[in-house]
Image (cartoon, rainbow, N blue to C red; front, top):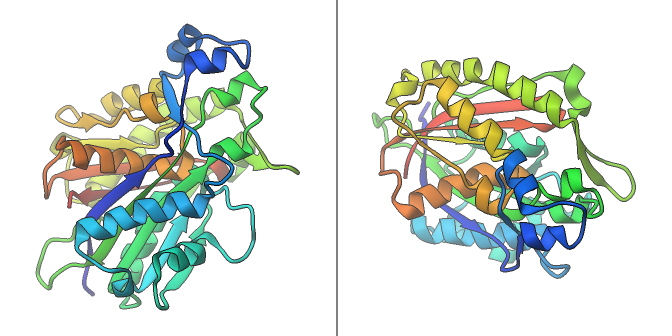
Length: 315
């Protein structure tokens, strides 16, 4: 079975920027309070006329252009999101329609903050099994639409955006660009991160998630590296789910990725759920912080409590 590789990435964020000072005028908070606890300074917020599939389509179009591919060359569209309001048509179908695709398979994957890494693994498996040759993998969320903007414990965290990757079959004999996935869940902690109710609202048990991530995730990340035949010291970059800077930075140290660039996009973008990993990864590529072929650890964790990670090679 042929492996897969990421040939291009892309990202998109709404134009409106919400600063900590803006939030201080809405709820009882301050820039000092927010930065000291979560490290976030700004976030992008979509307007009422900017649905999730529009964010996703913008990121996807950029990834396709970077890959030199046209929409009709895509066999499968996977959209990781937990903020789709409608049951049907799903986000993947809406994105395919926006991009003028003639007839790809279309699936949404709802694993909240670990959605993109689950979707990327699914794309890799589809390519290896011969079910697809080229896959468009997107993480997109409009967290502002499921947030209580009077609750200072959650509204300071969230942002909106999308990131995308084009995944293609690797050439025969070539090195795989998407490594084996390590994924799983902690069902008894399923309520630690929630988007539920009518209307749906985001809530979490932040301390529980923090304790789990900082104690369990380093071991999982090292196992991901082992599956890829690497050590943490070999990594050029680490892109964790951008939940909280107080989680991201200590985790990178505990993993042992001493030579790696650590994605810190949470400072500028907040927690964008399924969009956070592809958004941060795409920015590292765009900024030239990583080079083609470099090994990068992607690791998502969050709702359900689910997790998934793999080492990929930069496009």
